[in-house]
Image 1 (cartoon, rainbow, N blue to C red):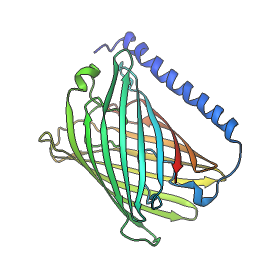
Image 2 (image 1 turned 30 degrees about the vertical axis):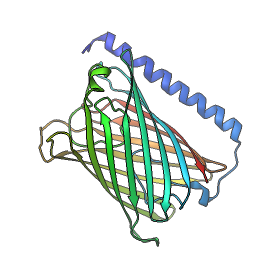
Image 3 (image 1 turned 135 degrees about the vertical axis):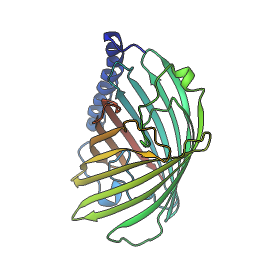
Image 4 (image 1 turned 45 degrees about the vertical axis):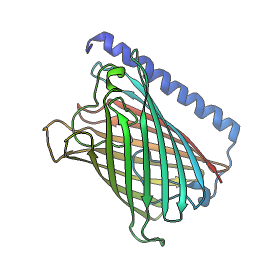
Length: 284
C-alpha cells in the first residue's frame, strides 16, 4: 500500500469529483423543482443515512432511493465512491420491506458490484408513544469490497487492497437493530443499537450504534448523526471507527427528497470524510 504523496494524490480526484458532481446536482434540481414547500404528510423519513427512525412506508407504497457515499480515507489510502439503490415497500402498515443493490469504485483500482441486502422493519405499536420502538432484521450477501457504510460495527479499519481480490471474499451476514424514535417539540430523536453476525466465518457478534436528531424548517430539515462501532464478542483490541455527520434534507413536491451529509471521522481508524448524497421518490 502506497502511503506517500502518491497515495494522497490518488485519493483526491475521487473526493473532489464526487463532491463537485453532487453540488451540481443540487443546483440543477433546485432550479427545476422550484421553492414549493411539502406538507408534513409528504415529508417521509428524517434526513438520515445511517440512523433509522420509526418511519415506515404506507401500505402499498414504493419508494426508490438513489444514494452514494464518497470517501476520503486519508492516511494515503485511495478514495472511493460507493453508490447503492434501495427499493422500499410498505407490505402492511406495520411492516416495511427493502431491497438494496450496491457497488463500489476505488480510485485507480477498478469497480465492482459488491452485493445485495434484504431488510424488514416491524413496528409493534400503531399509535404514537413517547418512545416508538421498531424491530429491524437484514440479510446481507456482500463482499469485502462493500463501501456504502450503511452500518459501522465491530472494530478496525475498512479492509484495503485490490478491489478484484476484495470482491472475491463474499460474506453472508445477519444484522439486527433495535430502533427507538421520539418526537419532542418538533424534533425527531432516534437511537439504534446494531448487532451483526457473519454467518460465513466464526467472528462472533459485532456491535455498533447510530443516533441522530433533526428538525424540519419549512421544506428543509437539518440535524446531526453520530455512529460507530462498539467492538464484538471476539475482541481484537483494535481502534473502532467513529463519525459525526451533519445532515440536511430538502423535501421537494410530489414525494421527492434530496439528502446530504458530511461525515467526519474522529478516530485514526475512521475514514477522514464520508460525503453522502441521496435522491428519493415515491411510486404509488
